[in-house]
Amino acid sequence: MKRVFALFEIKSVAERSVAERCAIKKGDVVVSINGEELIDYIDYAYFCAEEKLKIKLSGKNGTRTVRIKKDAQDDLGLEFTQPLLGKKRMCANKCVFCFVDQLPKGMRNSLYFKDEDWRYSFIMGNYVTLARISKSELRRIIKRGVSPLFISVHTVDENLRKTMLGNHNALPIRRILKKLAKNGIRFHTQVVICPGQNDKEKLEETYKFLRKLYPAAMSLAVVPVGLTEFRQGLNQISPVDKDGARQTIKEVEKWQKECFNSSGTRFIFAADEYYIKAGKSLPPLENYEAFEQIENGVGLMAKFMDEAERALESCECSERNISIATGEDAYPFLKELADTISGKCGAKIDLHKVKNHTFGGGVTVSGLLGGKDYITALKGKELGQALLISANSLKDEEVFLDDVTLIELEQELDIKIYPVRDGYHFAKLLAKV
Image 1 (cartoon, one colour):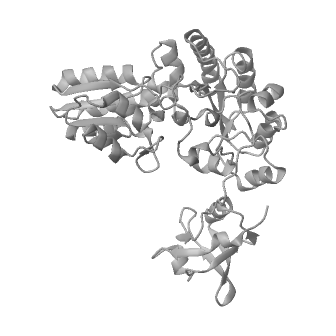
Image 2: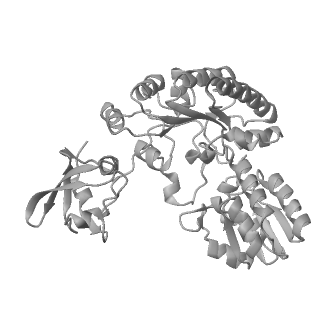
Image 3: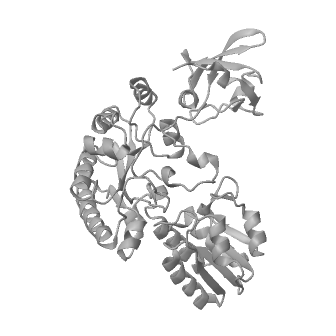
C-alpha cells in the first residue's frame, strides 16, 4: 500500500494540548511515530494510545524529532488538513440480497456507494465481509490489535457463501475468522437470512462454528433479509414469513439457553423484526444483555420502551395535543405506550402509522422512511401542537433518505417536528412540547 504522508499535514493544534506543549506547529507533517511510517488513522490512533512517543516531523526548517510522555488516554490535540482514512474502499461483492441494488432511482448519490472497509467497521461499526481482504491488511489488523470488528458471515458453508455474496473469488471465511480469533482480535457477527438458503440447518452450522470461537466471536445477530419493490432483474428471494420467523425464534432461543448455561452469555440474538413478523412478544430486557447488536435492530424496541416507561414514572406530561408518526413495525408498541400516557396524564396523543412508499416491498422500519412518506401519510391531517418522529429516519444533518429536509417537512405539514433519539428523549419531549 502506498504511504501518503500528505495525509498527516497538521491543520491546527489545540490550545493547552500535549502537542502544543511539545511545540508541534500548524503546517508540520507527521512522518513517523516510534520509528514507523503511518498509513492512515488506524496507525495514528494506535500510536496515540501509547504513553511514550517519538514523533518525526517535517516542517519549514527540515525534519526534527519530538519525544512525548503522556497518559495513554490523553489526545495529542492535532487536527489534520485531510481525512486520515483517505478514499473509501468499494465492495467487490454482488450479494443476492444487497440493499443498495434495491434502491430506487433519484436518491442521494452517497447511498449507492457499497462500502467494504474494515477501518470503518472498527471506527463506526459498519459490517464488512472481508471477502477480498489482502494478507497485508489482515496482518495490519492483527498487528494493530483492531477490535472489535463487525463481520457479515451469512453462512460458513464456503460454496453457499460465495453464491450469496455473488463473488466466487471470496476468501474462505472460516480461515479468516480462525486467524483473527487466534491472534486475539474480537468481532461481532451477523447473518442476513434468505429463506431456503442460509436458514435452518445452514444457520445451525454457522451458529455452531462461531460459538466455538467465543469469546473472540462476541455475538451473532440473525436478521431477516430486507426486500424492496425495486428488485427488477435481481435474484428471486422469498421474504421471511410468520411461520419462518417463529421457527427461527424457536431455534435462536434454544441456542441462547445452551450458551447462557455454558458461558453466561446468550451470544446469538434474533432481530426485533423476527418477533414482529411472528406476532410474538419481545423478550425481557435483560435477554439483550449489553445491546451490542442494537444497530442491527436487536433489542431496539425493547430498550426504547423500557427507557420511556421508566422516564415517564417521574415525568409530568403536558396536557397538550401531540401527534406521533412511526413505521409499521413500531406502531403497535408505541400505540400501547401512547394509550398508557394518555390515561396517566390526560394528554391527547394521536399515533399515525406511516407506510414506506420510498422503498416499498416489505420495508416497514421507521429508520428507512423518507420525508415524502411522512407527507403522504400526514398531509392535511390535524396534528395538534407538535409532531414526534424517529430520529433514525434522518441522515446527514436533518435530511431524510429521499433528500427532503426536516425544515421542508415542517413547512409541508405546517407543524413543529421533534426527532426522538431514545426513550428518555421521548419522555422529555412529552413533558415540554
